[in-house]
Image 1: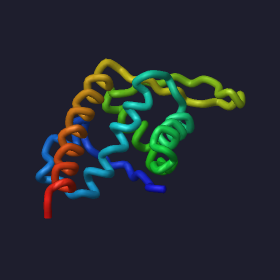
Image 2: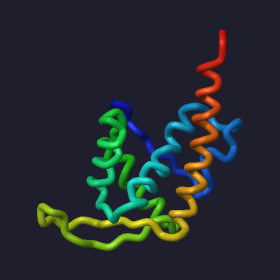
Image 3: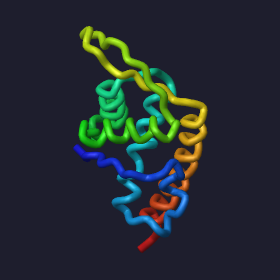
Length: 129
């Protein structure tokens, strides 16, 4: 499994200045995008977000708690997420996150940037040697 490590970037897209980023920065920058995507259709607590990413990636991507919770906090401070306390199905106290309007806009920017980067990598990989 690939471990996702968060980065500590501003709300500006990590894909905005691709030429200035290293390959590892690009992979690290996907965590915020994946969290925003996970929350684009539902309100979820942290463990459910990590599970959603793991399930949707075919169990290839695994988000560690040490990366997930700082990223959730950072996204909340940036105004991209809002949260409320509730109880999980196990009746445990859990913080539930949802996208804000700013978070939806950021997800759209991240999605566009990712499409450009993925397309560029695909073109390079498919180029004749």
